[in-house]
Length: 151
Image (cartoon, rainbow, N blue to C red; front, side):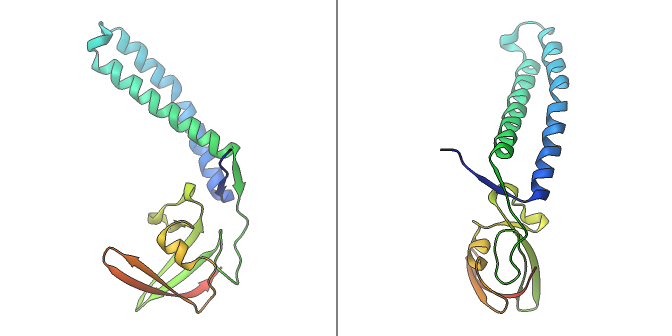
């Protein structure tokens, strides 16, 4: 059974751009491997091993991105009445306010304000409305967020 990846249109475009970049690096890595072969005995050739490892990582990431794009289910704009995939939600706790975009696990990047619907915060706020509270247990303790806006 194929896994379906839920991603936004923006996330799909980012993956397509990364795929083009990765594929453009194939030639340079092939040149590194060829150059490393010229250094002699391959069994004790650190440059060759390094270049082959780099090639393996590159090809793995290319295959992963191609699989995601092949099995992508695009997320439409989120609901404005309750938190769902594609929603941007502003949360407030005390005097601190944060805004997150709720996305699928593939494009989650908390440093960019994109959290997965499967993350602790994503799970806690999913399906809630403006004015609702969500309690999240973290290693530092329990935090309660109030949903201020959904867009």
